[in-house]
Image (cartoon, rainbow, N blue to C red; front, side, top):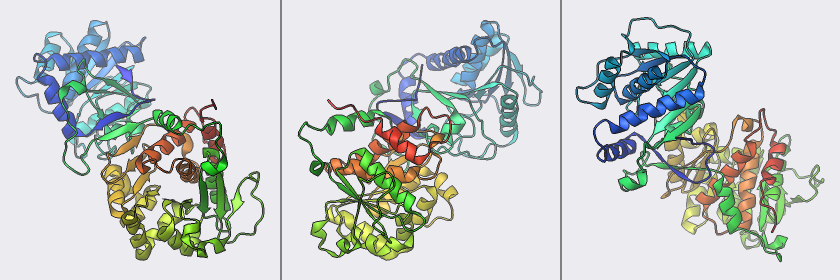
Length: 515
C-alpha cells in the first residue's frame, strides 16, 4: 500500500467497466474471499497508521463488496482493542457473495452492528466510508444520503474520514459529485486500479490523499484490457513530473547551442489594459528556453517591456508579408488579446505551422464559424494546434450553456473538443485533461490550489510555446503533457496563492542544470 501522489511515471487510469474486468480476472486467480479479506485488512492497517492513538471507529457499510471491505476492517480494528460501531445501510448482501462472507464473519466476531434507524455516537476518532463502490451512478437517496450527512457531521467534529475505493457519491469516471450528498474524505484507499474520477474535477478535493493497494495481484499479469470501446469509456493515463525529465533528456543542449537553434515564439495578444497577459506569456516562453520571443500587440507603442528587455516587438506589417517569412515561428495567440487580434489571428491560423490558442483567441474562434473552419483545416495541412481552454472557454467552444456542463464530464468535453477541431486540447483545472484524436486521454497529477490566481493560464500557454520552439518534432500530445506537468510541479509545496510572475520563476528553477 502506497500513496499515489506525487507520481513520477505514467500510470493507467480506469473507469468502472475496466475496473470490473480487472477485478473479475483477479478474483479468478485466488481462492474465494481472498481479495476481500486482503482489502479489509489493508483498510484497517491504513486506519491504524492514520490514527495511531485512536480508540473509536465508526464504519458505514453498504450491502456490496465495498461494505464488505469496511466490515472486515472493523473486525481487525476491534481485534486491536478499538471500539467499533458499524451501521449497515441498505438491503442485505447476496447469499454466497464476498459481502455475505464479510457480514457473517463480523457477526461471529461479535461486532456492534446497527440497523439503519439506530443512532450512533457522534464522537469518534475515525470514520470509514464503505457505503458505495464502483456501481454508483446516480444521486444517493434515502438511508444512503442520510448516512453521508452523518459522515459529514463527524468530519466537522474532528473525525478522520477514510473512504474505501472511492468516496461515496463521487462518479468514478468523471470526478463529479452525483448529487448534493457526497463524502468528503481526508484519505481514500483504492484497490486494483486507479480510478479516473479520483484525479480530476471535484475528485481530487473529495478523495483527499489517495492510496493504492494492488492486493498482491499485478494488473500486468491479468491480460491487456486496453481494447475497450471507443469514446469516453477509454481508460486514461495519469502523468506526473517524470515528463519533465523525459523532455530534458530528449532536448539537452550541446555546448555549441545558440539562440538560432532554439526557435522563435511570437505572442499575439496584449490589447490595451490587458498587456500583462501577453507579458506573462512571452516571459514564460523566454524562461522555457525559446531562442527569441516577440510580442505582437494590437496597439504597440514600441516601448521596452518592463524588466524584460530580452523580449522583442513584432511589427504588425510582418503579418502582411509572405507566410514563408514567419511560417515556422510558434504562435501563442489570445493572451489578453480581446477582439483586436481577430485579423491577425485569421492570418496565423492560415499560415503558421505551430499554433497555441488560449483565452481570447478561443473566445474569438467560438464566436466565428470562419475561424472554426480555418482551425479545422490546419490538420489537413499537417499543422498541429494546441488549445488551452479553462472550463468556461471550453463550454463556449462546444456551444454548452455553462462551465458546469463541462465540469460534469471533463473527459468527454476534452475529447469532443479535440475531435471537433482536430487539435490537442489541454482542459485546465484540477486534474487537467489532455486530449488528442487517436491518443489516449491523459490526466495531470501535478499542481495545487496555488495555481488559482490570475495569469497562470497565460504562463502555461507561453511555456508550451517556449518548449515547442526548441523541439519542433515533439508530438503535440506529449508536449502538452510535459508543459502541464511542469506548470503544476512548480506550484506544489506553496501554501498560499502563487502569483503568475512568481510561477514563471518557479518553473524556470526546475530546468535541469547544464552539463
